[in-house]
Length: 116
Length: 110
Image (cartoon, rainbow over all chains, first blue to last red; front, side, top):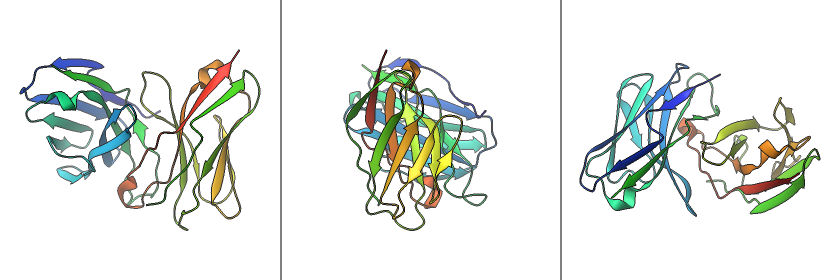
């Protein structure tokens, strides 16, 4: 089974801090994604990556950046955390479209981040 | 982007079949139909996906209408562990970008 592991289930940080959320997948997937989930707003795509060192903005990239130095690892960075970034963050991975299109995404269990 | 419409909530009795509907009247010919579910305090979990033909796997069955404008996820015997929010999604082709709506919250009664 595919396993997507997020480094923390719960995280509390202060306003202005630089925050790193880490995600690792063990299935050699090309695509990796970061979402945030908020009540009433569903899941919203922040960034995705289709290869090492490649990234594309999703629908709400403001205030975030990402890093993908190795195929299995995708990091989400909050450059200067703010209270409106308090949310559940979800990482996902999938096979690349070059191999097969419309592949399922496999999700981690999420990191619940609170910014005080 | 193709949009999906699902009921906000449904209720089922344990060990009975459950049919979860989804309307996607603006679906294009290349859109696959994906279903995910999310249990409390967990990330979404892939359930099943299909293009035109009905699909079965160990978790569920997917029935797709002939005109593809609607589909139904079928849980053959609901258990308490099936209580979750179920999402019907039509991924965009490029890079499998998924748009999750509000889904259907399934409540299973013992």
